[in-house]
Image (cartoon, rainbow, N blue to C red):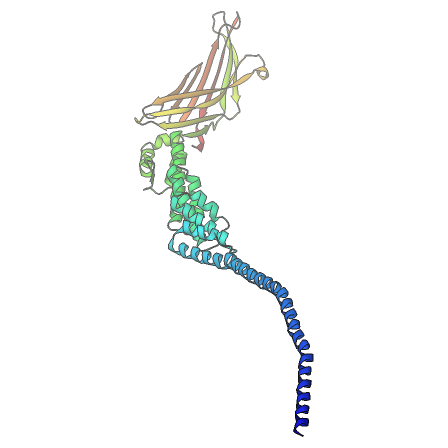
Length: 374
């Protein structure tokens, strides 16, 4: 019994051993399958690594772009505004130039304008501020125009200076500066009339100015006193005409010696002008300049309708110590001033025209009406 039991156990063991032996190859093959999977995983692992590296690189690029195009420009813009508030315009300009904000270029122009204003370059400042509407650019334009006005005034460009001050609007005393320019312009205009001997016009223009106004050593009060002291001379200046008819005559004398003559008295129906200017010299003397129109006969005829005339002009430039008397005296013509009017006389005697006759031509004009004051 015991032997049979041992035999069964031996068989069982053999069977188990056989089973183990038959199973062992199968078990030995499973690790090979696992190794094959590991090799596959190893082959796929680099691709995943590339993808991860690419994603990381892209993220870095994005970050760099954000820094370059968002963070840095925003920082530079903020730094620029800070410098602007501190009055560091050059540094602010440099910061704005590194910013991509929409209005950065406007602030660059604003900084250029502030730098130009500080340098006194008002033309450059106005060029930079043209069309600009940031910060206090409107007030800065006024300041630039004001500065331009002052520079032009100092250089004597009064008309341009006045225009600049008007464009400065309500900046400081721009309005009064514009008025100053206008008064100076009017004063120079009055002085020009004074220098040219148009004393009536000069007096009117000086009287339109503030009496205490002075410019370039020209005093309104002083000029008005001089004109007032020479009022009679002022009243002479201007254009005069004849209120009555000018007269003329033409005569024919027999040269036989008995002094017989015949002739015609003529009425010159035209209007003749005398123009006179009076320059007050520094030594107090008066220089009279001008001319007087007149007409005179040039022939004799037994028929008055055949008498011919010619027009002429007597031009004078003389100096007197006070009112004039004789302004012109030559070429058979004399022009005098007396009793508030001017008188011109022309007289020509011709004894060479004919062997039998001598001729005399004459005319007289009284300029007694002043039509224009100058």
